[in-house]
Length: 207
Image 1 (tube, rainbow, N blue to C red):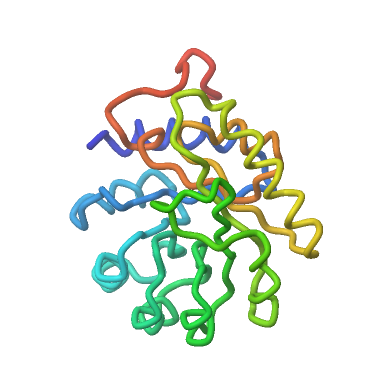
Image 2 (spheres, rainbow, N blue to C red; image 1 turned 180 degrees about the vertical axis):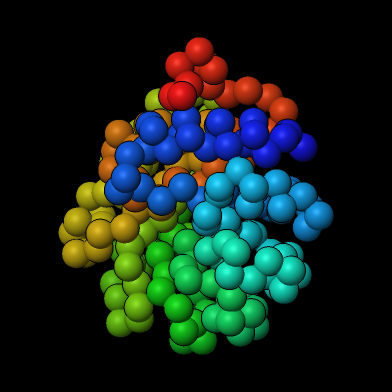
């Protein structure tokens, strides 16, 4: 794990790119409980967890020190943990989970129709609008080329506008810059903040 000072430098760089209207969600799936303190020292405010068990353990230790988001596949039987700990779910794709949720959510849309990916089809978005849905999210097919995600991000923005939804959670370490250009209001990033591999040019880092 990098030092808190290095994580803070990377966080400032991403924040400068994103601007004030975008929430940076630090994806902490691979950050052990013992190292979450480094993120706190670095000034990271919002963290996203993929697993309810990890969320519960980390929240028990850090509580309101972070704002907690759930970004993994939400099973309806885990809604109770999410309700107790999180302010937002990025990955709603089940009506049974929606009925149990007590916190706002974003509907995850599977725009590529990938069988291996979670998410609803675009035609199913209307089924969720009776719940506290604030926007949409998506995960494009994996690609080494960030530009390959642009069409998916643009389509998600179109769908959100058609349904009167403001929030867009899209973009991860590899393609968040493209997501920002297409209107993301949330980006979910991990290794760009605390991975060993530097994924930006430190010479352009804001001081």
